[in-house]
Length: 185
Image (cartoon, rainbow, N blue to C red; front, top):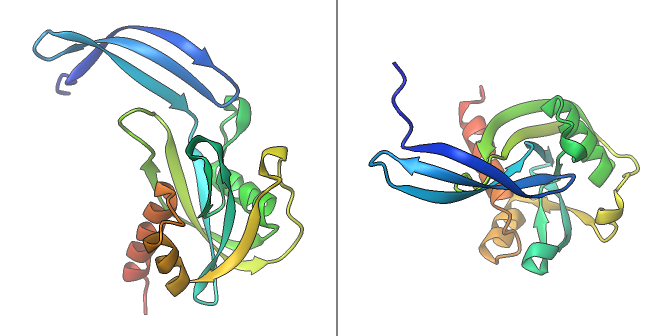
């Protein structure tokens, strides 16, 4: 028997919607019978790729409007218009789009939730190896994007210095470390 959820939706209304997200406000009821509201951002899952070679990673940097600054992160993105699809295909597309790199091998490292207190969105994390360079195909929103290779030591320094603040990038690195602990040899 499935236990009763701690919070049950009584009603819901969409308060905003665009190509990438829906924001809804739910009237909820708690276990004790009290009621309240809950704001939820519905976003499709996205893919994040760790392009790794030579004891380092290919990173991208761009201006992030919501936080008002440039930051470094692993290539990542989602399908617009709630199209959904295969996470690995999306990861491969994002890698090419943002870096021009093509991966010979794409290893799934896990799936995490982003901002699970306010959003339904998850992230599929992949390790890309056997990289072949090529031309990127960035979207108009990515026209200011920069790309560079960083060593693992520099990656750690960028996290400590607050130049990598993307939670999914740091969490993906943790998944990579766990993967490497279990790798043979």
